[in-house]
Length: 245
Picture (cartoon, rainbow, N blue to C red):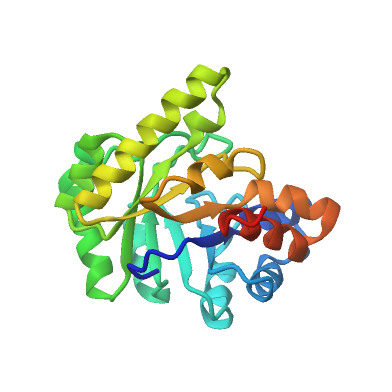
């Protein structure tokens, strides 16, 4: 994923697998979708292998690793099983996320500060394999400092509260928190990403935050793809990230 300041987009293909698993069939294939995403000009592919395999399955990440030439980001819980799997397939980046079986999607950031030693060991294992590590956290200085202390290279700031803000004042407050968190993370020497709930309607204000260089988006792109096709949906999001929209 690198340390360059250029803004980049990693597209999460989980929701392609959600549709496939709804019928327990072979289509649509998230690997095929990733190929379209790559041709559309995105900078990376993300997939979340959950413990319950509710959408992405082991086969998907193995083939994604072999076929896709873009940087591959594996989202994962910091469990022994997932660390072992990541060590085997060696994604370009591993993003550690919290995970609850009953949740629809990942809600809230990882408590790095409360799990320092466990996460430190997981990060060390990834680094031994040459895998860049990122922590999916709330834009909280305590969590940012903890992420730095365990050796993470990046943080992905959780933007869900901003995405769900119910009033203009809440939006301003959330953006201020994200902006300050991004600046602090950058001062700590971390590459700063953002994700969760980002859409074509709300991403512009986050793109304007200078210290955020990576955007990790899945649901909004796949939802738009139903109407305009995946190629166009990715290109439309890239236009907003590049300030062309």
